[in-house]
Amino acid sequence: MTDLLQQHCRPITGAPLGGAELTALLARVPQWQVVDGALQRTLRFADFHRTMAFVNAVASIAHREDHHPDLHVGYGHCTVRLSTHSVGGLTLNDFICAAHIDALPMTHGATP
Image 1: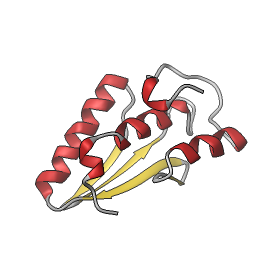
Image 2 (image 1 turned 90 degrees about the vertical axis):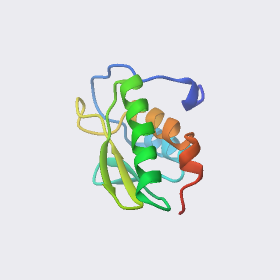
Image 3 (image 1 turned 180 degrees about the vertical axis):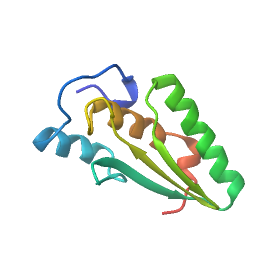
Image 4 (image 1 turned 45 degrees about the vertical axis):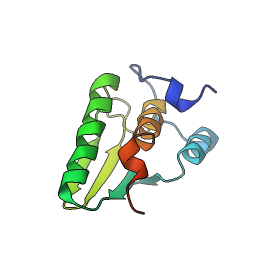
């Protein structure tokens, strides 16, 4: 499969991912986990300014890919949740966006 960073989201219909395909994609974004049917990651930052810079960078990815996460933002942290509402679960689009988020420079400055 082509590297996730080289792919872009596309309209998807049908059933959500499951089984071996889901497991294989999850291994490619190891800092993410499946929580209540969504792909989720919480990132921590030194302050609110850095958190909001990250949120704005995620918004840019979401706009470009036309795939929009749920964000929970607080002082020094942001939880990103990705799922594909049109199929009621996870699709390749969620993993593509997760990989693009992981590639953000601000992500590398986040604390575990």
